[in-house]
Amino acid sequence: MTTTLRPDGPEEAGVGGGRTQRWHIMVNGRRVGGLRTHGWARTGRYPGEICELEVAEPDRRRGRATVAVLAAEEVLRYWGCARAQVTVPVEAPVALRLARSLGYTEQMRNLGKRLDHLPTRPDGLPDGLTDRPVTPEEYPLWQRAAVAGYREELIGAGLGPDEAAARAENDHRRALPVGLSTVGTVLRRLLDADGNVLGTIWVTLHQDRLPDGSPLAWVMLVEVAPEHRGRGHGRTLMRIAERECLRAGVRHLGLNVFRDNAVAIGLYESLGYRTTRHLLGKPL
Image (cartoon, rainbow, N blue to C red; front, side):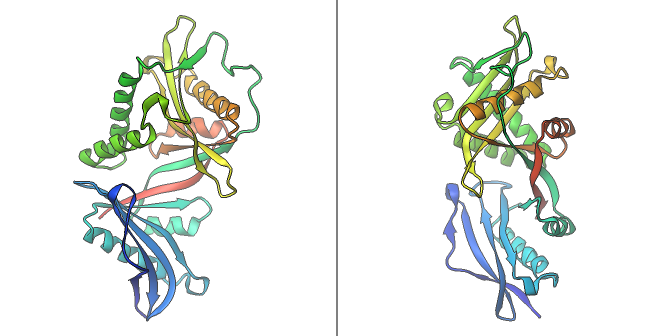
């Protein structure tokens, strides 16, 4: 039997000027499932994504998904993509094994937590510590440093320098289109008793929606000043994030963490965050 992809309608324009196409998975002319390919409009070594993969139950465990993913990779190569990305929910271990068998490696993962109550203290902070918003005067320097740090993390995850720079700039521009005035933005600094900045937390409220329609906030960045690391301030910053979510009426908080950041993964898991999705990539 021959497994192929057939377009499910015309190619569409993707977000930000990219391209996207929904495909039928066909076996000898019979539809057995589908998937979508998406490519971003960037120059250089830009990535593509394979998503919305589904195979009908009678045709599972027959290699249909494997052949379909390999065919989708050929589509992305034809589009000029240098890498393929897939996102696998934690509830889909079979899909995760398939991705790994095809050479995909984890780049980062999503974690999430349901927030139940405010901390005992009104501000939720240890004695001697306070927090305040990032000021307009501080913002430009913080923003440049945040973009540069994100770019280095993306390079460490396997992106090329040009692709990492483009993605870092684009992601920050999309998340903070009008800087501190962006609706739903929480950007706060943790201070010691002398007013020294110990770290910064950035959260976007109402970033997304869960399947039941409830809002999902997202931790965009947790950073502790290098000279103050190892003293529990990352934990305190996360408590600030949770406090701000609950004050805004948001009870679900998610975040990304890169695969090689074992310290951060350990911190989040100790706070009750659990993996929800794996994000994997593969060079083409």
